[in-house]
Image (cartoon, rainbow, N blue to C red; front, side):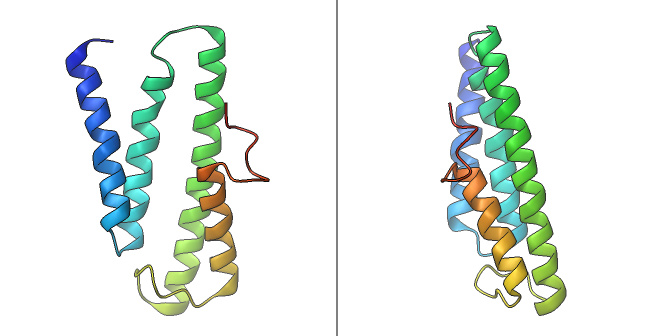
Length: 116
């Protein structure tokens, strides 16, 4: 991988992390998570071999599933509260879905099957 491309990818990871840490809006948090997911895949594939391909495929599928669950929880919470803020979780089902999605994204047990 050429150095300018690697710099762009690494700055995308840093920018996505900063967006997640400073956001008070669920949509911006989700966008930050997606930026990180899409930037880390080329880093996993830096040295191409079958194990890297398997790891990046598992990473992508798990992160995409977690993103879908997170967005579904956010949408349920939006329907009940009418707000996108992080601090306003009214519906217990939405809170459960968001907690499961964030645990999958972090690789916490019992959702650690994808962690290399």
